[in-house]
Length: 208
Ligand code: SIN
Ligand code: FE2
Image (tube, rainbow, N blue to C red):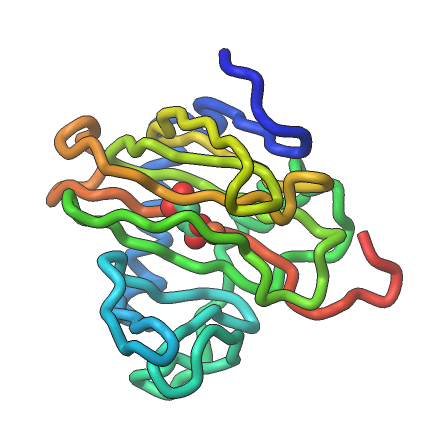
């Protein structure tokens, strides 16, 4: 396995197929309460290729007018986000090394053509907690680098059931998704990839 930057952990096959299927069912329930929508970039209003929704007390959203932010309600329906499934709370307890539970779970859906440019997750107030990410469905090519955009990057494949933890020195590492490998998983009946990212958003009194 490749050497990853400090603070980046890749846990291949963390969830077995039965657990992946159960997670997909749980995320389907989330999506029926909080439908996927197409986010737009701050200022330009350019549409992202990934569709998004959230579960948890807070959800990450973006649009032309108000940019990147967290809010307690769905930007289209105005409803509170559904709860984070227990299976994901248990994952956080097991790998995050942070006693405070996650406040936000961003649900990203990638079709075969979707990708995500290199970025940092830095809209949170709390960087002592990691970002914990789960991949379901088609594999992707994931890229991760350092804390500055011009630092060298390395890329590797994420398969269905894999978990990635961006913590410690890696919490603010640049990362992105270069491409989806369509047809590499039968988990989602219409194909595509789901990525779930668990985060703390506000400062915890005791930190993590
Ligand atoms: C993200 O950075 O929000 C998504 C990463 C991924 O899809 O693996
Ligand atoms: Fe990210």
